[in-house]
Image (tube, rainbow, N blue to C red):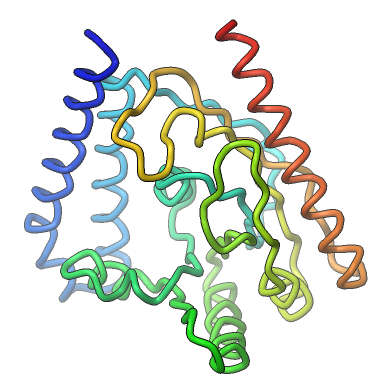
Amino acid sequence: MTLWLRSLAFNAAFYGWTLFCVFLLLPLLFCPHTYAVKGVRFWIQGIFWICDHILGLHLQVVGYEKLPKTPVILASKHQSAWETFVFHYLFPDPTIALKRELLWIPFFGWYLKKVGMIPLSRSKGKGAQDLKKLLNRAQDAVGKGREILIFPEGTRSKPGQKGTYQSGVASLYFHLKIPVIPVAHNAGLYWPRRGFIKYPGTITLEFLDPIHPGLSRQDFMRRLEHEIEGETNALAKRAQDKLI
């Protein structure tokens, strides 16, 4: 099967499965939170089945077994849509800080609200208000034993590119006083942002050593950026070397 045909089959299966689940799981919007989360995990498990069996895109996780047993802040590199799925695949009920516009999408936005995501506005003048909301909702989520997922760059970047690391992750670090786990991966090589073509292979996602509370804001941001970018570039290089 050619790459184009494989991608066509994958996209058809992905969107078909998503549309099916949107309507199948609608009753869960009126059920308790835990049932809605199970429904979302059912949808995402189907996506990874499609990745494995149609696209030939697999997942390798490094460092998961070393994660603390208590709630943490997951600070992940952001290159594609793939990493917005994988954390619900690996964790039972993470909460994600995401752009508010996603909540406006019919059906999809309803599920995001139901499972307790944290919407952030990109409008000027709402920074302080958004930060307060982020910290309050994150504190509530941690109290319920949930992981907090944030993409420090705020938007997706191409492999080899680095976005501007925003200060929201540092505010979470100081407010919640729990470890931050830098997360590196090479998903952008296989599932490019805004790309129809998807590539077979193995995405490696790596949980790096925790950054424990106690650093200054400057030292924390410097270390976080250095570790995420350094390991992301290393993972991309190793993947590209295998293709040569």
